[in-house]
Every structure is written in C-alpha cells, then in structure tokens.
Image (cartoon, rainbow, N blue to C red):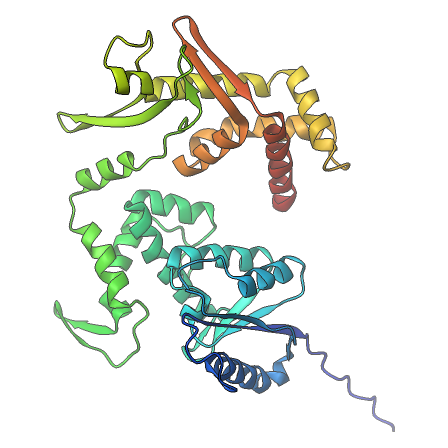
Length: 385
C-alpha cells in the first residue's frame, strides 16, 4: 500500500530590513566602519532565523554622522516610506538607540510599525516585538516615557485605553496599575525583599535616567501635577485670534488662590497698555468654547458639507457626500473625549482665522482643512469596520 506523500510545511517569508546609524562622522571613511559592523551583526541574526522564514531586504538604510535625537534622517525616512509601501515586515537594529535616542520619537516610530504590521528586533538586547515578552517590555518602556511627558496617571490610563493597550491578562489599565508599575523596582534590575531593594540577577528593562525622570514627577503632590498639566495644555487659538484693530492675541495665564486662569491678550495692549484696544483681554475658556460651538454648528449645515465634499472629492474620487457628512458629524460627540493636543491639532487644521470685536466673533474656516479632516475621519471609520 503506497503512503500518501507528506505535505511540506509552508513557511511565511518575513522581509527584514537592517537599519544602522552612527552619531559622529569619525571613522566613517574607513573601509570597515561602525555601520558595517552593525549591519554584519544584524545580517548574521537574520541568517540565524532563516528557518522561520526571515529573508534580508537588500536595500540599505544607513545614517552616518546623524544624531539619534531627531527623526530627520534620510536613511530612516527611506525605511519608513518602504514600510508604508508594504515592502518590509521586520526592522532589525543592533541596539534600540540606533533607531532613536528619544523615547517620544521611538513611540512615534512604533506607531508607524504597528499601523503597517511591522515588528522590530534589537539583536544585542534580546528585544523582539514578535514575542509577547518583547511587546510587554515595549509597553513598559513607553508607559514610563508617556508618563514623563503627560505627568498624570489618569491621562496616561486614558491614552493607553484609547490605544488598546491592556495588561498581560487583557484587563484595562487604570491609574492604580500605572502607579504600581512606575514603582516596581524589578524594572531597573533590582529585587525587593521585605521593603528593601537589592541588586537582582536579571537585566534592567528601564534605565536609571528614565526611572529618575518618572520619580521626579511622582514626588510632586497630585495637586501640583494637575496644575502643571493644565498649564501645559495647548492654547487652541494660538496664532489664530485677532482683535478689532487687526492685532494678534497671545495666550497667557495667571494663578490666584491656587487656581489657574488662562487668557488671550491683545498685542496692542501688551505694547501700549490697558485701554489701547476696545477688546484687550478675553478668558481663554470662553472664547475657545465659542469657537468650538461655531465649528460644531458648521458641521451640521448641508451647504458646508456639500462644499467640503466637493473639495475632498478632488483628492479622493471614492468619497461621497453621505460619507463626508457622516465623517464630519462624528467629530461632535468625540470632541470631549480627545486630548488637548489633539483638539489643538484639529482646530489648527480647520480654522484659518478668528476675528473678535465688541459685537461678537467671526470664525473663518479652511475648506481644504475640512476636506482633509473628512478624509481622515472616513479612514478611521474604515479601519474600525
């Protein structure tokens, strides 16, 4: 009796791109330099994963003599462009800091990777986002770095929820979890016994500089942290607000009795003193709310939606008027859930100019901005579907 032939295992191919970087130009003229050494180590690692379907992308993405503190790097830009074009599955680096020395920039790169289904590997740090442990390590790293930027466990928990980041068991991350994580000395390579920490036998996930940065914030009282967070809130109308004499208004703030008060002040008043302009100073919250209310009213006006649709159609023939209307009306209920930075981005995209006078205000919108937002909201709907 003849045996049926065994089916051969089909191994998926993973296209691996090597990225190398060196901050200084010293030694780059040598026949074998640091970039070559990085590439050789990365290519050897890729070769060791051949049985898993890893294949080397022959295009070289190198940045010699460029700091890791910026994303303005030719080699990196070519890599990101190829990722967006679907030409790369795995990014391989010698060390994480070759990719970026700034964790905020690092998180932006990770967003691009995630959006395109790309994983990345550091060959000298056993860091591999194709594994669950690698993804967990990445989330811990970025949680420390976002906390340092935001300064609030509550806001960080909200952002992580919006990004779909959960605990290893799939549970929602709340601020209590975040503060326990930020105080877990295991992440800096220590072991704790009966309240005393000792050097551990495991490698640190978080470096001391990042740990100290987070704990400098944690030593502040919650009230001070909240006040600082509010003070850092972007001014929605920065560079957009003008008075009856045509002078621009600048954002400012003051504190009274522990409370923060934000204003926009006319440049005329700043130069010539009170009384030099009929509208010299306006409360930031009130004028911002008035502008937002006008924006929301505009979204519900059929003639505005029709004009936006025509502008959007010039760049995307597949978008119809109903989709444009649905996209713009989605903004209204979502607005209060957005972070201040995102609200400021949308206002800058949509508003060309706000003129304020003694009889009210006039908001001039950007038609091209409305069209861009409609396309953006439409894309988000499509991604969620």
